[in-house]
Length: 507
Image (tube, rainbow, N blue to C red; front, top):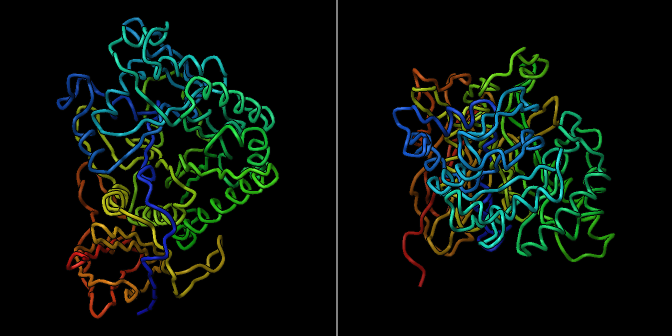
């Protein structure tokens, strides 16, 4: 058996755990909205047409924030199409996903859903085909209390109080040639800065996200962030990161180490942002909004020709996730937590059906995909502050990332509640690993409270409509806490979460 060690110190704090780390994403794409969160003819539809089973799973997942309404969709979206009497709303072509948008669900409906799910809205404005005036208009509709044309329109549409949305995305992936309204970094940086200044004139306390690169493989990566922030640094609070991972050509070893790439991505964007800040002689720090991330088998999707017709809510990228995918998702969450000093908002893309932890069938059931479980457990258990982890682990060679650690881990500590949680993955495909966690720097007696692992003899096992609980977390079989040391055996290709609790209150 392989061995690895972690030393933890409750005083070695990275940053508080940001609840916005556990965000999700609802885009008008495929079946995410229609027959996903919204299906008025479903047996479990509520009075607003929302699926109660999906709402319950969203709450169980622990989602705290949802980015809406896109995504590529937003770059051609007219927000005013989705307000007012539903029967009078226009049907529009969605160029991003070659489908028809009925506008049956708009911002008022989504805000009602978000209130039921108890999630914060991160609203994205269209800076692809639109600009400053439209951003001000939708802000007036959503956030201005009363007494203006658009705030009174909102009130007439049934929302007497403003929605109070504080986190706003200034467009989406405008570095990408596929994006409707694609722009150069210079063009986008000037537009983002102008839009940010206008929105702050309307409401000074807004938090604003500038578009970073669509991915670290983009040819303009780095230079895009630098140019955009040269224009917008003083006007925005965040720059976005987007990243998707998949197993390619049977290279499971590289895939299991995907978090190595996420670590490098975050570190690179932070370095670029800080470099711009230094040149501008600014004391301000730009944070990271990692507002699209997940496992996505993009290679299966690329090259597919759109259908000749323009369907409504077609089945688009409904990936079925296996055990290895879930382990990678758990590891990506470890990476996000590890960077909590700068990554203070993140959104797994997407919530339902479209590369999602929740799947549904029209008129039928909803169920948890394998990737649901590490997200739900991490969202439930990660509290307090993220601790620095001094990790010593065996390594293995990968074709994509070079030499990487077999074990990756992060820990959170809530001193007030007395909870220490260790999240760990074993990337080895053959061997279990005994992980030893040194707790001697803690000034209290910690006892085992719960320990979960997600693994399976069949790494390709999935959850389906017929077998919705084929893959679930199970209690860790081999774990002890004794004499200030936690010892846990991590099965091969596994994600685990171990919560320790203080035996007696301090003081």
